[in-house]
Amino acid sequence: MTVATTKQELKEKLIEWRQQDHHVALVPTMGNLHAGHLSLVELARESAEKVVISIFVNPTQFGKDEDFDEYPRNLKLDIQRLKESTADLIFAPNVETMYPLGLENATSILVPKITENFCGASRPGHFDGVTSVVARLFTLVQPDAAIFGQKDYQQQLAIRHMSLDLNLPIKIITGKTMREDDGLAMSSRNQYLSDDERVNAPMLYEVLSDTAERLQSGCRDYKEQESRSIKVLSDAGFSVEYFSIRRAQNLKAPDRDCDELVVLVAVKLGNARLIDNVVVTI
Image (tube, rainbow, N blue to C red):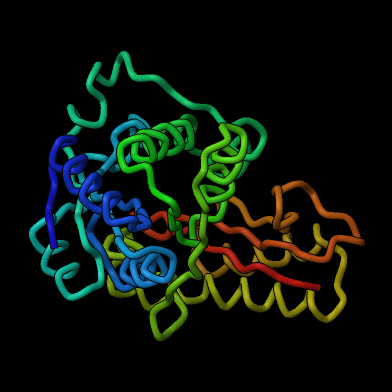
């Protein structure tokens, strides 16, 4: 497995693969890898002969009061984990490589509508940073496919929108959310949970699952279900940022004829911000 930190190192390996008519799949990450990331690598392998996983903690998707400086970084351990995977190349650039004109002069890509609510409302500018850095990775790697996790549901919708609107010849693939044995969605930020909070955290998925069951059983009073779930989580000690039932395709408000929904949630539990979702076919 190759580790590339510069654009030239990446380019040389990509030229070698293209000369051999290999397809390339990209898995963008911010490192601190867990089993969820590794499952995306395996999904990428199904779509291409060569797999690139990028590791870059992107400063433009963090707000001024967010955890950029504290965000967990351990490239050495990430490389060790990836040696046991089917990844072919790790691309671990620095900020100067990704933003050659500097952060203050960086070009930004804004995806309208889809990014305005939910995490976009509570983290202003977050999705502009995400789509902009993903566009940069797409330009550098020029993958045939790119793989993203379902846990960041709004993010993968924004990237799909961007790719379609810019006519990018890249297949966007969404991998299912990987969970701990008790149902908690795997996340790099789970390590912020205290022992007591970690015991309580799986309730988030329990409430999502209960809401999904109610929708599948015929409940169509979406506002009542949202209010009910928010109360259950609040009573259990979660600070609820949002809990919403939306159209899975575009996050618009559903009507009674909608046949595919997504139930989205974001909460604070202690120092950890947790997001999760379930897709429901009705």
